[in-house]
Length: 229
Image (cartoon, rainbow, N blue to C red):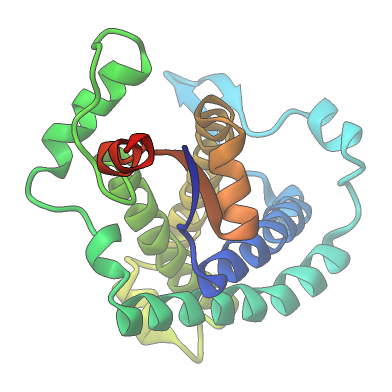
């Protein structure tokens, strides 16, 4: 027997779907800014092995000579990104949703078992509530990453006015490195997240859109017995 149960609240779905395009705009505009001073690479003994990013990457995405455009978009949409994150944190704390989201003492051990199950190296997954252990760690980490991006971004944006924040970030250059590394982390998270959504199936995706999921529940044997009599 199929039953419909509520899984995700409207506030959670709102924050999730608003954050998706906002983060995309922030990464895109960030690349327009980074082009003007793309200093990061992997160099060993004077030989450059990897450069982030090569010229063909910039040219394919039509990034060169759009610095002012990137800054305008980045500095505008960072406020929407921040407000959406603050709204989600307030909702999570106020509704008690954080209890199902924040990792427990067993989460890191169980996350390994979830990974083995996803790789088909383990037959059964550990028991879970609304989120499994790996999801708890990943979703909590992305909230902390968002806070880190806001703080490092403000340090880069206003280094003189917020000199105390720049000092707390380890200096301007280190703040910029952290900001860049967090962006790479978002891209990695997004790729893994999409793969997990595909593996989880349509029912899971539908619940994030509508808020409800369809579950198979065994019929009540008592009811069947009464129907027979």
